[in-house]
Image 1 (tube, rainbow, N blue to C red):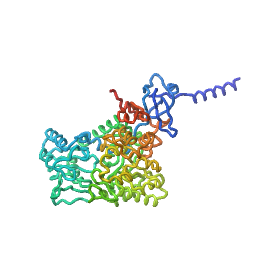
Image 2 (cartoon, rainbow, N blue to C red):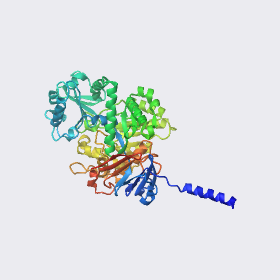
Image 3 (spheres, rainbow, N blue to C red):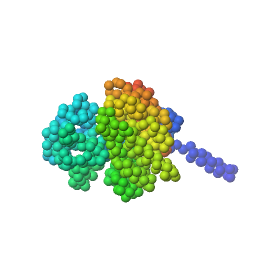
Image 4 (cartoon, rainbow, N blue to C red):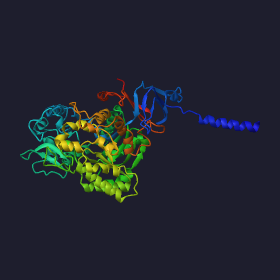
Length: 569
């Protein structure tokens, strides 16, 4: 008996260990959980231990993972989805804009001038007045006086004679400045247009205050000098505040990861420090946009993947803008603009610089994510990518991206699929640009080449989604709604044949965005072993009436198993 008894105990012990249930720190129950896994599985509950999901299933199954210490959240039937990923934005700039005048909702130039006047009254002489988000096509009336639909600077200069004013176009591809700003930037009648940009002048040759594309660097350089005169401590405090503000804005909108398209090594260095401290509010995927000579020096040192417990990755070059924006007539087109026939847009960053960046990306194993808004820019980028791939056949998993991909010639569509190039789109742009884009491109070209989200999907192109904050609000519900409805503010539908299905739209905001950042193994779906990044919504966006989608609220944003935002309203 003695020899038999011991082995039996041993066997029983083994089975007991195998049947042990991991205890969860956090459990979600009574929910409508869309996992977005390969089977598109549904569940009602899930369990989290630490920062990882340990079980997904029914309420009964998941309750087995609880004890008296487990935090249990009753979802009350609400929808839980993988933590939403902002696929293209400007993180530090978002934080920066939250500290200054918000011009996105101004209905006229006069309203903007009034906002600046109030800011001047609160400021000391010489202080900069900064604003962000204006777009001339969203105003109810054309300014008087104006040129090419843009205001003349006089009214702005009159109310701010001693304070330089810099107001950024919502696209980020232009600055509007007053006379004081022009004086400080050295802009006068003899100042030449820089390559890839334009100092907009009236018929008499006088600068009106608008700086298109690379011309904005003239005033940006002056402002950068102003910032550099701040003490290092004050400058770091300002930048840390930007990080915190942008993070809070993201979390309140259900965003758990943010893919930043274009930051400096200095900014990434601060983020690295904050990651080490545990002070990054959301997960960040960074893209460097410093000049190629500086990248040659620093890319190897700054390459990071999953740094600070998966809060910081830096392995991308972008967003070096090959061209400008359609809204400022800067997108680089194959043919001229219909409403401004003297131009086909701008090649903002020299092609040689993009080619050099591609060489560095191969050398240091970085992804490329370059802006190509116009069909000419897209074609040039595809040519560069194709040449690079063919010259480096053993490089492996590229996942190079073209950001925005708004206007694509039909002959280039299949090249995305053939080259496995990812199209980074912003679904919301179809609705914000829809009212005016045909005036830029013409009806036929818009229909054939513009905002071809569904066509790209049907062609087998992998797309990703976002809102390009702060160009648009960091509001995934707005982008999701436009992706599936294409409904404009006047009730009309912009190119309805390009609507995505709801599954395609959610996929583009979760697992496809994760894939575009080489992170599909740790995020983008709700599966055992993945990061417990979860967004809980007030409505089921997969089934609610289409017009109700924009009314959806974020109830919880859970990051690494911790509730970082809870809607208490």
